[in-house]
Image (cartoon, rainbow, N blue to C red):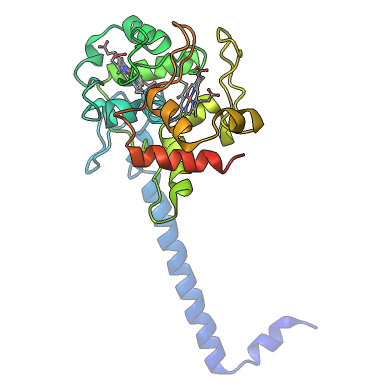
Length: 265
Ligand code: HEC
Ligand code: HEC
């Protein structure tokens, strides 16, 4: 049972094939080794991304930023700051909402923090959007990240993008994406289940947009649309109030949100 003699009994063709295969495998091995050698010897500069403070990677449109600033850029999208103040704070969404790109870097960190936590004086005008009060909704470290991002001048951070709203898939499907894109989910919870604390308010929590009580009170599409458009000012900071989305959301988008909300009860 010695395998060697059998191998020698193979035809010449097999031996040549095995020899060629061995050479090819060896060359591949050298190639792979050279590839990894090259990687570990300086061709892996993208690893520097995330550790710097604004150095740009060559040939890329995206600037490497610190983790704090990157988190701030994502929070700016998550909390829909971008939907009122424009992508990267450039404005142009509503005449009532200022651009922040030139303004915010010149405000102090304390001024920015106070505005995020307590708003800019709750507007009693139902036809105009106001700066929401985020105290208790946005965690303190996240507020610091938002401030760092704004102070850094709103750098471009890859994938800090709002969700895509599907088209031609029905109003409720679009509304589901809008519910995330416009940050409703941060205050009314996933699936509009509610439960987010609002300690100073009479209900102690931000209301759900689902369930029997909601369906009984908001029993027409128009009632739901009205409160989305004009909100409800329930008091002064630190009470979290329903923002006014008129002039931010179009009538069609509001109808899509209503269609989605109605699928949840
Ligand atoms: C519903 C729309 C809306 C959303 C969402 C929103 N803002 Fe605002 N924001 C405003 C409006 C309107 C003002 C102008 C002041 C006012 O009328 O309340 C404002 C003012 C500000 C200011 C103050 C500018 C100044 O003149 O001092 C800052 C800073 C700011 N917003 C940052 C943010 C950040 C950060 C977020 C996300 C966490 C955010 N905003 C989300 C509407 C919005
Ligand atoms: C900053 C937190 C916040 C955000 C963001 C927010 N809401 Fe609200 N919302 C509230 C609060 C607080 C109330 C309760 C107002 C009251 O009782 O007067 C409310 C009330 C409502 C109501 C009426 C329900 C009820 O029982 O009073 C609807 C409908 C609603 N919101 C829809 C939305 C939609 C749609 C979005 C996203 C476009 C949204 N909300 C974003 C805080 C928020």
